Length: 499
Image (cartoon, rainbow, N blue to C red; front, side):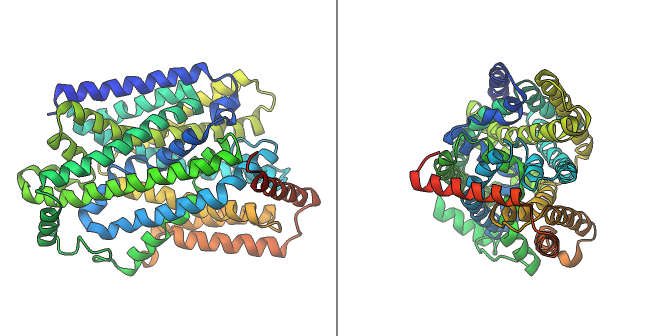
């Protein structure tokens, strides 16, 4: 049973997040504020929010759990993910920030696609919006599952009750505060996650008898755990090596780039974000890896972890730390879950409001009506995600990888080529989105050759974009002129060092 000090600390953290949500509500005057923070996020907030919204409960639950089961071979997903994130900041972030401003100050990714190719039919926007809703609802469900398991373990309540507790906390501050509240809380939560993943591995190693003794125990009890290749098959290697491709198509990360106050601020944000990411991923690997030694030494404490490896961080926090400190560390797990779930909810809300409601239903809607509708959509998406998360046997890692693959394949090639290829057309973009999304959806059902569905999805989407663009009419002069304007802005920025 969780101690009272741990529960009190945990609940105080929840109230702090709600308070920040209330502050965000006071700073939200327009719909642009609600869904993109008015494009005024500085380098630190942009960096920490991008990192926190990227990682989710995967960082402190699924990833350490995978390391605990497979050993260091599972760390490849962190290595390739870091490379993918670096490339995303380097080749996508500055251009996307510049291009979305040139494209009639686009507030959402579907709006950017539509304006980028001057799609008067709005079909491109609608297709992108539907893809976002499909995969983000699944992504949100994974966050609900992670939160439910945390509350279930911490307060010893049934899963069916825990899912409500975990969801309501996040829904409340997103509902009132919007994007600003989400970004501010993400900054706090990213700092808490960083602290937890630095401190926890040190304690695990200490209580396992030190670094050298821990390695000896791990080698004796899990022969392949110290190998980077482990028992991986070809399909496993392909999965880990291509994980980083998914970064180019994740709307919740790309939106952070769009919300940065300037192109220049992205350079500083990149350094902050990647430093944070490397430290956190290293800490998560260490938690899972050295917990192998700890629970081998203390098998009487390992029943919960052996039943569900994704609870390894929760268990070591409760066992090794003072109850007050344990409450703070467990809050870091909630921070990871809330940061991503909140961003996903606000993005689904913005998609339903900006890309569907205002575009196709009520073009003359007032700012107040848009904000109200956006908040109602938060409730709608959260409700659907909770229905999908009702199964207590759901595997967090599988749910996240499915959604990650969907966005990576559907949007990754479209984003990259739209930013760098002047000859790309609207029909090419549409073909790429549909090919990528449908490939992932179909491939997942049949699991052909055991290959991660993002790999064929990404490759086929890229091929579809190139073939359809080259065989059709070239883009209009206005679209090509806009591309040249963005190129000129970027050159000026690099020359002057600011924008």
